[in-house]
Length: 326
Length: 312
Image 1 (spheres, rainbow over the protein chains, first blue to last red):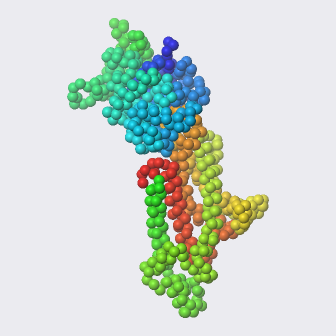
Image 2: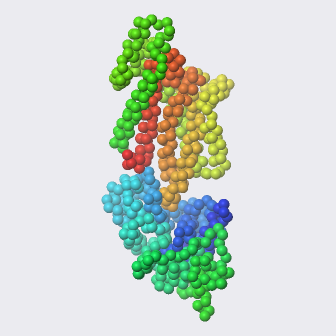
Image 3: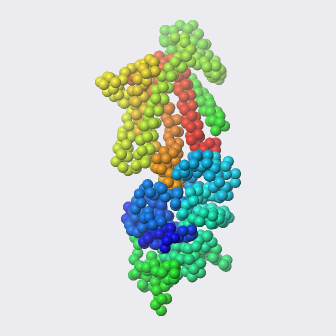
């Protein structure tokens, strides 16, 4: 495929710790095409953050890339030099981080920070400030020119996240990574910011890798979705197909647990019982086995491979094999 | 910012007033008649009565305090009992020597300490980090008077690179005379500031906004020197402000070892001769120096950190 932008190819990442190697990511494979919005869902600790820091190579020092490749426009980022990576960051690939309250430097003005990130541009400082003000206006910050002089603590959380989005889109990147950009915000702000993001995306035609555990937002925004569990992809495919016909029990349970999906007034909110397995000491067989209500003897012995069930729809579960067999 | 400065200096004045009043009362509470001690056992009753009246010691304590403050706001710290000269004049004659010594010491130790600390934090757990850690700790552990004596012995007596005693004449002469005493009292501060900056830097470098700066491809030098150091420096400024008080006391050692004129030497000399007006005057000026330097540190912090400006 020529329009593929980012390919994650059999990526395995460990963290070296005193307890032994933490297998944070195992055999992750998926891709993002140009201008496409791909969502990643999963519980906390499923490896979402490791995945995005691996793409930008902003990982902790104890990170080990065991296997696989991260190809951006055909170039393997894991083999790129630090210099090449720095040229990509904030230029071709931008990121919006999770916590808007901590994401900006507290002692530099917003204007200064927005000028600094244009360090590749040869424009004068005044021109850069103008561009910054335009970007702030585009994400819905009123009176942007005057507010450039202000410091992060003078903005609300929602404003700060808008600023973060403005900063990320300033270079008109090919890929925007959004790491739970609305998790720390109120529900009403969340809708506003998602809508703004959609508008800007259709203007700039950048691809977005959108990480969230809010299924409603994913369904609203994304073209395709990747479901991760305990450091592995358990299902991926077209967003409608996955929501209407999930092929992995974990995906099904996630959808059942989403508050937006619960129709009747429930006495107890549904949950998935059990815990994510210990990544330093993974059990054999299927990783979801202990929490799965449809587990079979086979699940304890063999790891189900991620297989294509239909065009573009992959799942890793033996149940699908039973169906095919019978 | 101006508002903050006015309020901060108002607070400094209040602190100074409380500190000086407490000091005044404490000196009066010391047992023994100061007049008798100053004049010695053979003084005539007439002489004693005259000095008592001169020092206003025959007045009730609150009146003494009022007289003291009335004189103080007019810049009058009293009269030296022995020479008859104004205490203000004597103290302000000695003050510049001590001020220069402290400034020289804090400047070189802060510059070097911040450099070492920032470098170590940018390369944590490397060999250089460990070496600077060992050096820093040994600097901190070296007492100023030992360093003063040793550096005097090595650099002034044996190598004869720098003069051993006095304050020197002319700009270069004074600077030359400053080197060894400033080195002696600044050395432990190099280690202390280096450790402080390293710890503070490592904390800031782990914060999310540094990750953001890196994610935008801002070069590492700028990330370390502007995005991180400007925040990491804040606690150091406070520590230096308070540290001026400690430097004042180590300046006493240096002034004695290097036979330099200065506030410290003045205090020691006047204590041995029980020259109370001078002791009182010098201590008051030292207190003022300390209060001013902490207020200045807060001002610098407010200038560096917009959050501090807003909070107060």
